[in-house]
Amino acid sequence: MSEEIFDVVDENDHVIGQLARSEVHRLGLLHRAVHIFVFNSTGQVFIQKRSLSKDRQPGLWDTSSSGHVDSGEDYDQSARRELREELGFDLGSTPTKLFKLGPCEETDCEHVWVYRCLWDATIEINRDEIERGEWLEPAELTQRITRCPTEFASALRFIWPKMNL
Image (tube, rainbow, N blue to C red; front, side, top):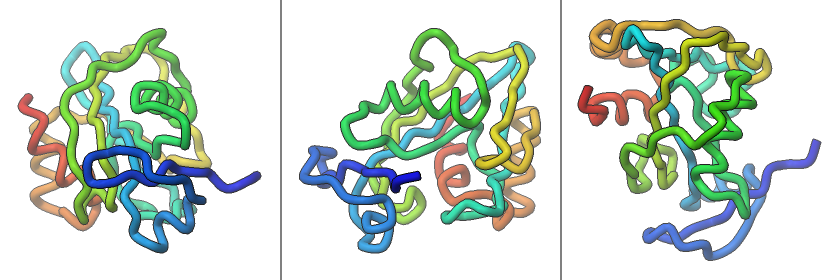
């Protein structure tokens, strides 16, 4: 499998080039990502435990689905693709866009669009990407992050308080 190619962007999220994933990360260049929170109709949020084979923050709890925006792809396309690839479902539409975050240490130099969607059907996690998943009440997630922050990916710790639930 060939390595992913990312758009390298500037501080205003304008594309300035393309490079392989490993080079973008090695050089600490700005790039793009999405994070999607999946809620069910009872208000619980799904979180995933990242596979130990991941090159960034392996084995940590993270947002329901997340990933890089591939070169030539837009944020919305990436959000739909990540839900299919990681959680095995297609909403049939783009999840709801909530807010955008600029690149920082917590997001690993990524411009990030955060999304939300509702899903009550089966989730089929991709074992190459995700070790396991859990449905939690939002208050329980907040408590767990506060109690054991090192068990959670930096992006989730950064994004979750901004969710305004």
